[in-house]
Length: 206
Image 1 (cartoon, rainbow, N blue to C red):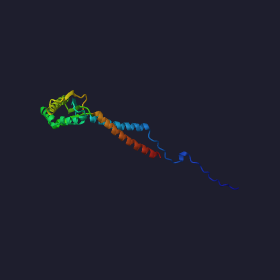
Image 2: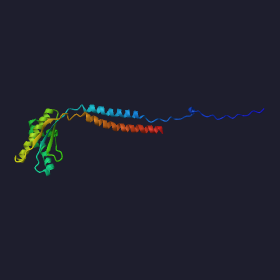
Image 3: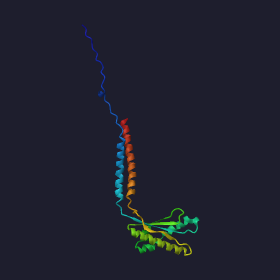
Image 4: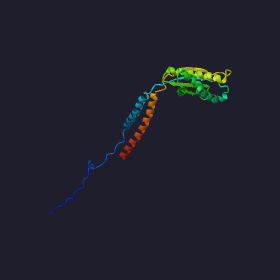
């Protein structure tokens, strides 16, 4: 009696027996959004508190109308008046009265005019709001006296159209501005971090 040789049949491997590397899913958009928010808050909040720590500086302003005879030369005339207003001839008497120097007073003073306007805007910065107002008033009066001495009394004299007054909010510190800068920095950092995370996720998923 002959015996047949049985050939082993090939067996199919179950999926569990196959070795494979699971594909990684890209990061959840919610996770990326939360990460970005935390980065922005991490830069904005410290910037706000650091910006609020500075010494308070107040500003006082006044507006002076300078009548320009020739409207065709308003720009040149107002440039000249700004130079006069910031000159030692105007500031030295005020500095002597308030026991300071012309240079320090000039550093605290800002003067500008807009376009073809005949109005001079001046602002004085100081840690004492009332002193800032008094300095603004003294500089305005000294400027008008100086212009009258230079041009004589035959010409229309400058006049104060907005009396010296203290601004409603301090000029410094400005924590909101610091926080805004912190938000901007945080957005840039978050954008870079998200770009790196997305790139890594795609690389692992491929």
